[in-house]
Length: 114
Length: 109
Image (cartoon, rainbow over all chains, first blue to last red; front, side, top):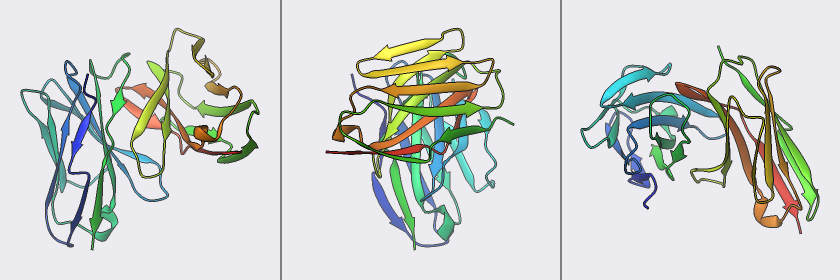
């Protein structure tokens, strides 16, 4: 069974540009979480989607947004990139929202803003 | 607001030693606690999941305990190996995950 897949694995963007990161959850999983892990910092919660709806978002500016598609895959969009957006972006999926099931993470997308 | 703390921040042990990693959290209203492993620059690998009603889970050389009332969890690694070298993260979950800052483990051959 395929795990959580994220694309691209690496990308380099220029400050001010926009970027879209993608996440495909494990088959049957309806919840997707996005986290940011900047170098030397802990995992910061960005967004939680379940059954196509945004259920919660972390303390990030509105230029961080996303969506979840009918097949439960998800996109994270970041507009007007800033140098401090350079980080590993991690996506996780679980079978149900917010609850008791085990969650699995992808390998992440390494974003570098120059 | 939920706060998760992991102690120690870093640990270096000789191969074969048994070790304990600690995790504490401030709000006991959780659904579960999950231990993860992260290799440098990589994603998170799930190690063990403990539901809020459980006290303990075991997988191979790993054993995790949970005392929800006191807000503590431990991850016990038996007979450590160099391949165990990684950062270990605990996360408590209620709607979202709240992560600790991790324990960086180095197992010396």
